[in-house]
Amino acid sequence: MPSATSAARWPRLYTDASGHLSATPWLRTVGWAVVTMLAVTGARAADEEGLRLFEQKIRPALVKNCLSCHSVQARDAKKLKGGLYLDSAAGIAAGGESGPVLVKGKSKDSLLIKSLRHEGLEMPPSGKLPDDLIADFPKWVDMGAPDPRTGDPAAKPKNTLDLAKG
Image (cartoon, one colour):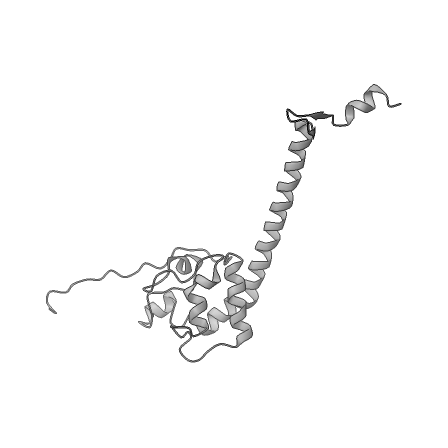
C-alpha cells in the first residue's frame, strides 16, 4: 500500500460534470506546455531548414540570375526593371510594379514562381532556369520564404513632373 507522501506525488484523477474521468488541472497544464514546446521546436527546425535552403540555393540563384536587373546596384546603373528589388527581404516583401512578388506559404499564388516557370512573365528573360533550381523556389516560399537579409526596401523614386520638358 502506498504511503500518504508517495500518493501525494501522483496527479489525482476526478470525474467532471459529465462523469468523464479527467486529470487534475496541473496535469493538463503540463500536457499543454509539452505540446507547445514540441510545436516551437518543430517551428525552429523548419525555420533552420528554410534558411539553409535560402543560403544554399535561393540566394546564389538570385545573385547569379536576378540582381543585375532587380537590385539597388541595378537602380544606380539605371538598369532596374519593374521597380522590383530582390536584394533584400524587405525588397521582396514590398514587391514591384506588378504588385507583390510572393505570398509567403503560398507558392501557387506567387508571381515569382509563375515568372520562373515562364507562366506569363518570363524571368530571367535570358532563358529558363534549370528545373531542379526552379523546384527549390516553391519549397522556399511554402516554408514562409525565410530570408535573413536585413535592411529597408530601396526607396522607390518619386515620379516628378518637369514643366520645362513639357
